[in-house]
Length: 209
View 1 (cartoon, rainbow, N blue to C red):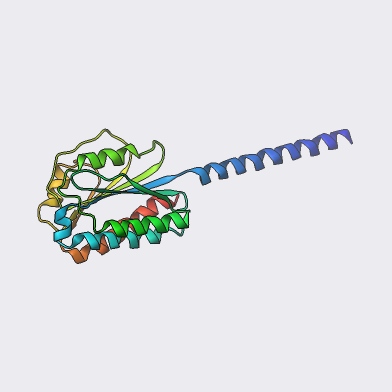
View 2: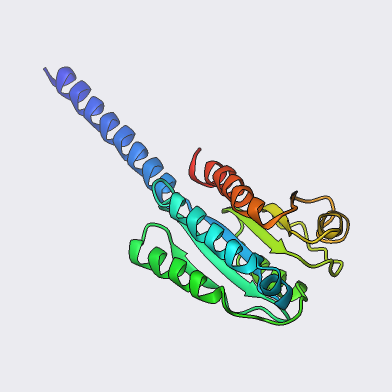
């Protein structure tokens, strides 16, 4: 009888250990976070070409599609020109914060930030990268710009060349050369489709597995 009692007690203890391990693993999976950082050109040329409003609308539409299954993802939006503005941030599992972020991005579409000097904007973006978190940076510009390299911080990168000829080559050869994917947007009308494709692949990377 005592042997039977000890056997039942041992089985119960093992059950609690297994259950505790499952709960811990689940908690760790739930707690694991990811982030999407958008570094968007708001220079004068983006406004005069008409690309600015299309870019903002495309980003807002793509962000809205994330909400369903990316609850542990933080979104950061950095508008830049001569210098970057402070990042706008929201957690996607906070519906009010997500809505306010999309509203602020739409309102910023009228903000002309002058010329284009993107190293400070990228420094600001890289400062947000947290080791161990899945991170995607989407960088948009119509500028044939500065050479820029960074330490081998781990993140996925999309470089979007907006409309102007030569920008894609500049991004490939001078801006974080050898890293990320370059997307060459030849006409303004293509920008919405390109952003949709980028955000869909980003959603799959950040929000699954």
